[in-house]
Length: 338
Image (cartoon, rainbow, N blue to C red; front, side, top):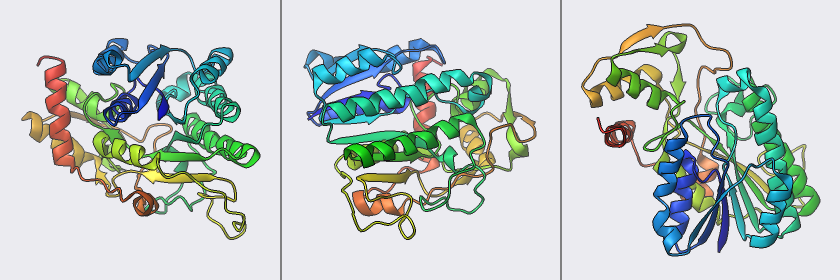
């Protein structure tokens, strides 16, 4: 099949593109290579895909999602079978500092992808939502049947908006769409703005790490290899219409339209301090710590109920935090030649 993978120079996107190429699919990878974090890391990820460029399985296109004409032309020319839309302006705290970037990438950009699917008979759109949509929810584990109407950051609000926009297109144009609510992904080639990367770098440099909410936080840390396995498998699970579904009695994660929402995470959260300890143990260095209050836009706990995803894909995460942290630290030291 021919796939479009947006965010192909990103953390998850470049792994997804790689797996698809390994399976023999043709992949067009799109990314705007913005400077939200070091662009050299994005180029290094793309370099991992060079062997598939040589074999003709991978093509890279540098383009911004908000380029309406460019995205429309790309869809028209390439005639994709499926789209895995992972590109977005990421980061909870950055959405407080630079909200307009989220409107351009996460709202307009998502709409250009939906329009491309609408006009070119794409058989399945899989797109990245986020665990952040659960916002003020305190019931755990977070289930896709829960209400997600109280986000605590603009980033979360844009991801909820993506789900609503996808539903409208599934309903109006019969486009099968699947949204995946990602839970705290980590691993090799990870993003420099995320805690595992920040902690590892600072501990190695002898710098102090900030511990939010005085360490009383829980995260459903999920290794990127497990995430990619789930993404690849869900691409084959194409939502179908269900005319018997009713708003009053049906789950908000499904619809009468060909529309689905799934959590994708480990399903076993750990305390932030235990994750820090795993990094310390792997590095053999005790971190200098600055304990501080909860930060704006943060949530106390994330915890995924992943039973629905498991049922349709037979996907269940395999990698423990100890194994995942060891893999990440090994990559980090190798990449930065430490």
